[in-house]
Length: 125
View (cartoon, rainbow, N blue to C red):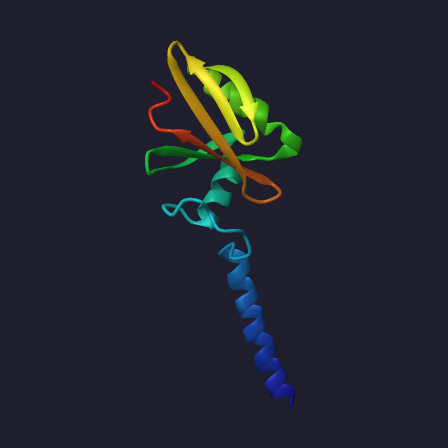
């Protein structure tokens, strides 16, 4: 009986360690080109408050810490540094203009700690 309990405990421990290290417990990412583990690692290793994690399907994807809504100012500053003027926010959409061009940036809470930011490609030009 003790041997069986030890084997079950060992298997449970191995599965628990795997689930934690692979970030299995985190919600699904809206992109497929990077893993959850890579995304979390990139934000923890970066000195910048917002980090580009992928370019997929015509969009640049960024991650930032939620930090009680402070990400909103970080997002506006990042886009504004490329000549875009913030116009308004509607829900999770942020609207910017540069001359006659318009840019819509969307955000999505990924976990309670992180926000995913989706920006149309070529916004930096």
